Length: 130
Image (tube, rainbow, N blue to C red; front, side, top):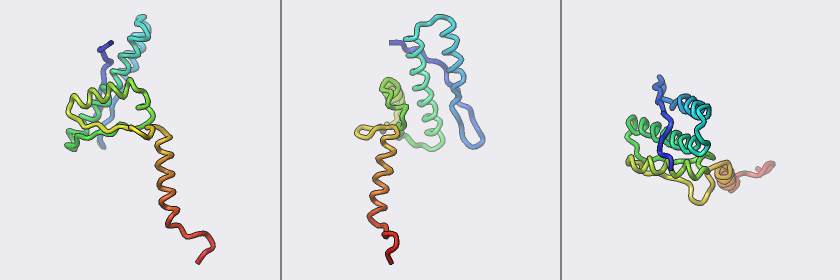
């Protein structure tokens, strides 16, 4: 398994920070041009994105002291990325929450909307009633 990763930069902003993925993209292009195999590039890319997630979480922990992280969103349907991110975060002392029964993508959002709508509908006054 490829363990190398593309570099990640954390950029401080006035209202917080952002993870700059430009270096990662440049490294991918350089590897493609150098003839590195797609499998190695893909592994390095996933390692780099997982490192970005760790870097962002570390910055938030430094500011807030929080050590619990929730991984949600369609990107976490990618089991390779999810596994690498979880491994890095847990090795760094984070407690990681992730989806187990509800999908992390729009399906989960839709389910949440349906639950809220159902709850609100129980208390709704029918239109035209007094």
